[in-house]
Image (cartoon, rainbow, N blue to C red):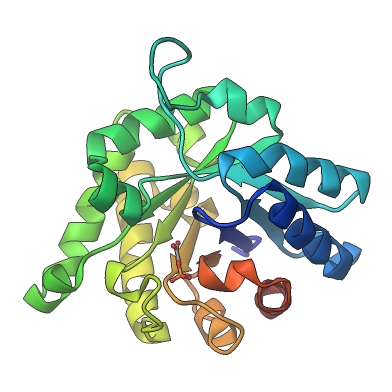
Length: 256
Ligand code: PEP
């Protein structure tokens, strides 16, 4: 089964509206229309930049999607500082990252939160990009496959196969995020294959074969091709390299 790759850029807390518009314009200018047949591309700017970025992309008829970096699971109410699924939807989001390791480690997000957020996004017809990944300590202990697969099981608890198939999983070893220390293609493939096997146990092989599993962690124009050539790696979640149009475009080219 050939899965259409997804290249998603996570801008994190970078770029004001005016900076984000410039970066989006650069990406849009370099994005070749025919690539949209072979690869899905998404940028996940900070909340304030989503709508302006979407306006640039729509004006250019550019088939790059926008996504959120986080969401709250409640539909509305007294949740100061939070953003709902409907708010993301109205900004034009097709995707939303949940459970990024920075949310888990810096903001205390739990597996249960990730599950609630994924369910709320599914309900709102936005595809969750569910992030999982082990710390260096867990990797060095040797039980990293179990650890990551348990994160996957927890994130998908109570989610039906018909909805799971709309979700994306991003394997992002914490030791590779923003460190310049990329997992080797073999290391990344080993865990992405285990993630797919877990999805297969939960939903059956047919569904697991349709679901996209991304790798994230210091992916750049130099290492993308080999990582993306692995059979169970269906794209990338890109941090630092998504902040430079030339690098992001080179990664997209590696996926086409
Ligand atoms: C990320 O934060 O999702 C990420 C993969 O970052 P970087 O590419 O900078 O390691």
